[in-house]
Every structure is written in structure tokens, then in C-alpha cells.
Image (tube, rainbow, N blue to C red; front, side, top):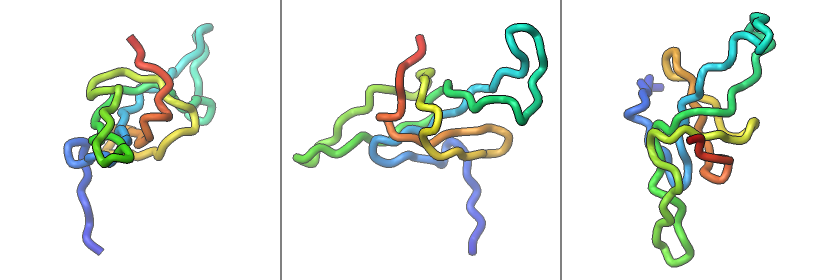
Length: 103
């Protein structure tokens, strides 16, 4: 089996999928207590790194995505597939799993 080298620039989502770079999780609480890795929650905020061409309509045309590369988004907690490229963490998810664009 051949080895495949992946980078953000080589990943192109299909359909209405988006590739999101996960923001770093909080390392301490509001009260200043440091959290160990096992106690940290999975972040739900990230930045769009790549988008697919859009979902196909019944007539064969494409429906554009509402998000674009560079948008900061809030997504569902258990949505998508986690992917690690080097030291960066990404999530590949469907556009319907994005809850909001963070201003």
C-alpha cells in the first residue's frame, strides 16, 4: 500500500462538506485552575480551511454553501470526522452540522 502525504492544501471536500481547523481548547478554567488533557472538552469552534463545491439539487445544479474559507464557525459537538495533520487538528463535516458563523 502506498503512503499518502496529506496537507490542508491537498484536501478538497466533496459536496456540501467543509474542512474546519479546530481552535485550541481552553487550558484553564475561569477560576484559574489548570486542566489536564483528560478533562478538556472537545472544542466546538473552528475556522473553515476548505469547502466543497456544494450540494447537487434535483435538477443537477449546485447549491452554494453559506460559509466561505476563513469564516469562524460554531459546530455541533459530536459532528464530523476528526483528522490530525501534523500537529494541527481538523474536522471534516457537513454544512448542516454548522450551527453559526462567529462574528
